[in-house]
Length: 236
Image 1: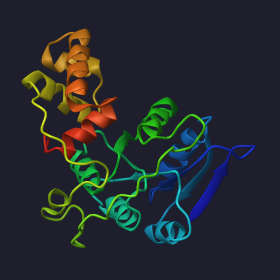
Image 2: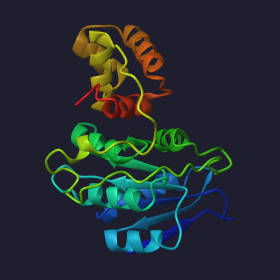
Image 3: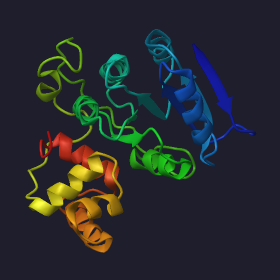
């Protein structure tokens, strides 16, 4: 099932949203289509339709919904990345579903978005994969396809044995205990204020730790920091 939503006039980036739940994909699409640099949003409800459409053309960004109890979303993401290694993919899921995020990043996803991300946060997520304000991605780098065993993404050690298709391996960053705690909180979708309350620290102190860990990881924002943390094995 594929539905299209377009701005008038049609211009800007094309974003596809894959999720088996109609309510979720309609809700996400409504927020994405409100972004000024998104010209077209296509919502896909089943993996077969997604792969059939990818065989003829690709979107500027593919957003894939995941669920903890069901691995169909993650399987669809890995199939898409296996067939199109340079495809910019963002994972959409629950803030406490670290396993799905880790597995998706291991297969080449560029980052993740929370289910309840606002339109602005979604815009920042799209900019994370290189989408510019004019709705274009300046350089589409085609990475070599990862070695894939064909096993389900969440089965056994599959995610940990597959190298990332997004970036070359980087040396491990030496994060302090506090920086690790802040990064872990970010991976769970917690705000700086929430992390501060749990650690009995002020929000300004959490921001200071966040800036330091961003610098150490070479990350521009939370999504990139979390993705880098999983990719480098800093978090498991």
